[in-house]
Image 1 (tube, helix red, strand yellow):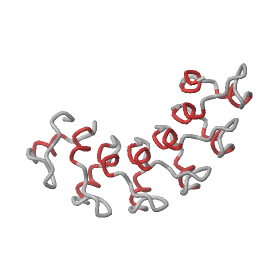
Image 2 (cartoon, rainbow, N blue to C red):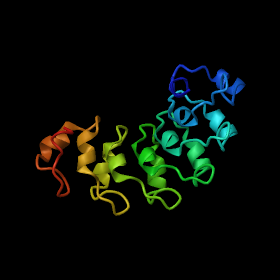
Image 3 (cartoon, rainbow, N blue to C red):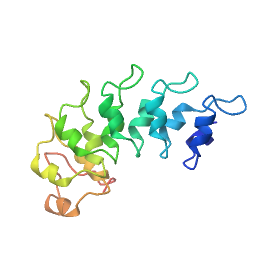
Image 4 (cartoon, helix red, strand yellow):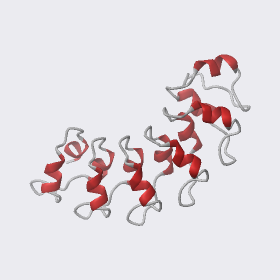
Length: 172
């Protein structure tokens, strides 16, 4: 059921009508967690998972359609497990005000600076306003190198890199 569970065109009413799976096979809750068309009400209404399987917090954290209210309403995570800060930091739907309002991270877990640096939604003015990084973590120039929204004038103006870190020429 991994393929069906991961399929972005999955009609969610099938899952809602058959929470224990189909034909004796359980849904792959890990794959559902990664599914970009996940119905977040399903998670909100079943925080412990489905059919004895818990949600993958790694999958939910990386899911580009993540509803951040779920994170804010459950800052400690779900089902006794913490959010994956690497996934949250990389997530292109990350509302940056969450980072600015929680500079030390969430629930005692720090933001992943490589994830923030490579996040395609990174507001570059944030980098300019905080040239030394965030919360005593320097920006990752390696992460910048892989960031698809990297402003190239930053590279032209700093051909040797930034903050004592060279550009990753494979990433550029």
